[in-house]
Amino acid sequence: MRLVRVKGFSLTEILISLAILGIFGLVAMQLFNTVQGTMKSNEKQINRLREIQLAVRQVEDDIQHLVFRERRNEFGDKVALLRGKTSASDSFLEFTRTGWRNPAKLARSNLQHLVYQLDEDRLVRNHWLYVDNAQEGQELKRPILSQVEEIKFEFLEEDDDWIKEWETEENNLTDMPKAIKVTLTLKDLGQIFRIFPIASFANAAEEPRNPALDDGTKGR
Image (cartoon, rainbow, N blue to C red; front, top):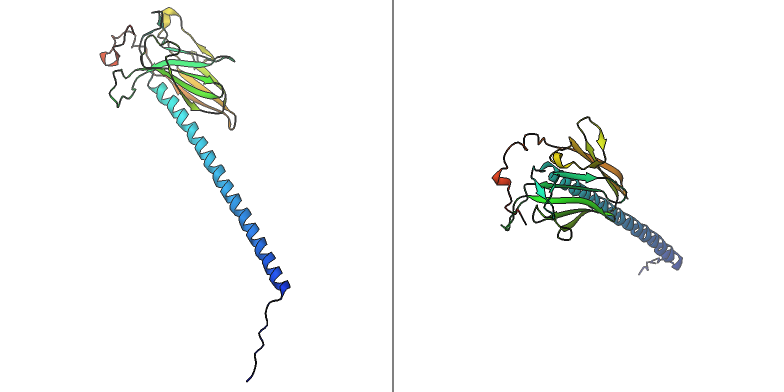
């Protein structure tokens, strides 16, 4: 009977094979970690862009629904339809909008008085349940955008000049700018801005108040 000699692997060959497999495994692990890190980074960027888009859309929706509605403060004095300014210590935009949805059928109107301002590094939207007598401390605060370094509000006058403050006199409380420019300086993406045109309220002051827009909260 003829014997067949079977040649096996030497120890050196086995060690070399294990070393090659180890190198391939290390490369595969590094590639996996890189792909996973890229996916997390992309997801973070997508979420950030979504946050910015939702915040800008909220501001746009509010300004588009800005309504002619006389309002009184906690002292009973009439205040301007629109107030706003840009300064190093206090930048804000204040007005009343209509179209406030009420799916829960709460005892309130469809009007909403609101203020946009910067709280540390967050753009905050404050609103009140009632338009009149909006007192500090009774507002409902909702941060809508993070990592905000600075916010600027500018107002376009009739002579096409941009100004940084809109505060009308008592006999001109219904005066409105032609447009509002909102500029956001973000810590991660730099500066972005949007310009929102304002509907004309020239005839609204001469017309009687629309009962559909009355919130029934006068004196509150």
